[in-house]
Length: 359
Image 1 (spheres, rainbow, N blue to C red):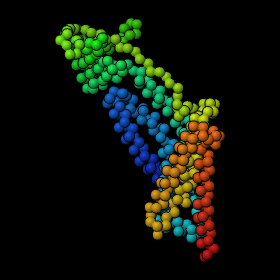
Image 2 (image 1 turned 45 degrees about the vertical axis):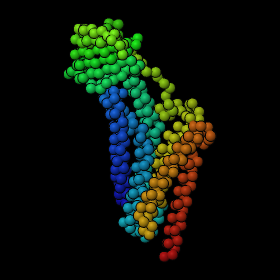
Image 3 (image 1 turned 90 degrees about the horizontal axis):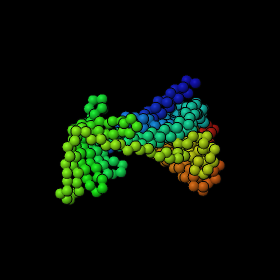
Image 4 (image 1 turned 30 degrees about the vertical axis):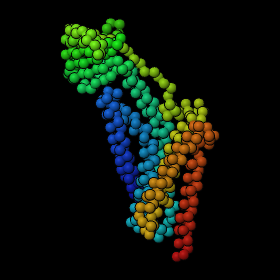
């Protein structure tokens, strides 16, 4: 019991370290992507944290599977290198005795992965899509970023705001270029603010400015100074599209029973199963032969995990395309990996019995 507790503690520490490193990589990638979109005015700066949180929830099931596989593999590889496994085998215990502590560690993680894969990740995907839809439904003025030229969605108007005053009530040094009836108009104003009329219409009100209007390439221009100029903000509402299969609740996937929904359902079930299968797979893959080098088992483990992951993706695509029956789905991959796992365990157990009888 003491050994099992220490082993599970070692598994946990390695898994936490692996998840931390992978999360740091994903966070950096998402942060760079979203900050670039925020700098361009596509995403509100205050929306970056929310979108990152939704993205992390989508990645977590895969991260947990990688963490369990890496934790068991690295811990057992260290045991081989430090000759702890030699003591283990000398005491009369075989490699099969590692199955119980590995299952005690991987099954709770698989349950958490199932919760994420079947319920939380689809919810976060749906919330992320809805959040982006709400951002797209903002009016053009709300997406203006100080110090950045912003083009309207209809490409007939360009905004520029030098800075925003305290409290976000006013903007200073406003520039607006618009094109109407083949005539270009340019407005500059010292100040501006947003005003809402009694009927609910919203206007951008420019104060103390000047408007230049004319046809490019000709001398037909006129200049108008104004104290107050109001521009109506056209309301815009993004269309609500049908949710993708990744964003649909698991119960809805069961009710639809189509090839694409069956493929998505099999994929969600595969995530917790992969945690257990790859956790057990790490036991025979951790074997280190001093004569063949210390890194060959790590390389082989990476190849096995990549093969398993790619096969799951291929069978999911085939199921979505109707090339495989909906009831079959990804199960051939799981069964094949389980069969290979039994073969590896049988070979190592046979070797162990041979060495024991030889003594």
